[in-house]
Length: 365
Image (tube, rainbow, N blue to C red; front, side, top):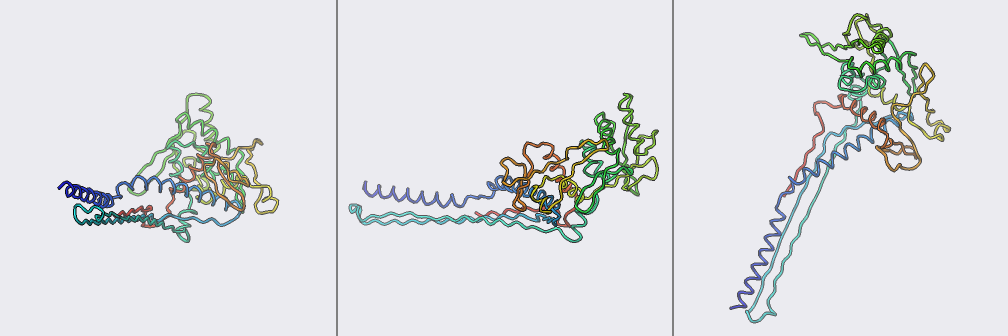
């Protein structure tokens, strides 16, 4: 009887092991995959976006055609298959050598990620990259806390006829003599809280109003008077209607000629540090510094370096024509301007009715 019970206990233990294998295979992996996949795809898509933005700036610097891709969808499909099997065989209780037991199982895991890219071309390319930014969006970024001198230096081609510098492969425009001093004065007024934005809505249209207040402190009052004089604004007014134009029709308007994303990328790309060998081979033109009317050399808004080998600590790096182009991870200003450019890019309409990229994760148990 003891032998029979011993074989019965072994059989029961074997059956329990088989059930545990099968049940573990049937547990769902869907919920556990959400946190892992969402973070992994977010990180990879962000890194890919930075690399695509930088490589297109480098291509523009070299006179090459940029290629822009939209991520339309990310689909990840999982499948898990498990199988368990067991066999039991015994003869007489006293004939232990003839007794056999067996257990086996198999499991299969399949991961099928599918990412769809849509190139920007035709009307979508013109709409998203070649259309100038709305002046209200540019001033809205100033209202959100971005420095007025940085925003206007990046996004504005001219303000009430005062020209910004523009440097690209096929066009060069020198800044007006008073442009940089104008931005310096506006930055001080912004720091004192004297610049704000207001939107007026009516049944017919929506109007953006730029507000610039004076200050009882003498230096800031001088800044306000200087800005009004250079821009031709009415000295008795504090609110000015914002329009998209090269020049204002009167002293109550602030006319901003904004740039498109493609213009902004071209201009920022002009400061990329290119290898001397490429300049000597006439693959690319030499980088020209930005100089004020007083003869001072301005540091570029963004510093993109080049080297023959891959950098060790880079915020973003891409290879092009046997060299690496990169932004130093310790260069906070360049990282900030590059992120600002990517934010501007996200403001443009790059798609149709399909909306934002859709991430679909299908998990089977």
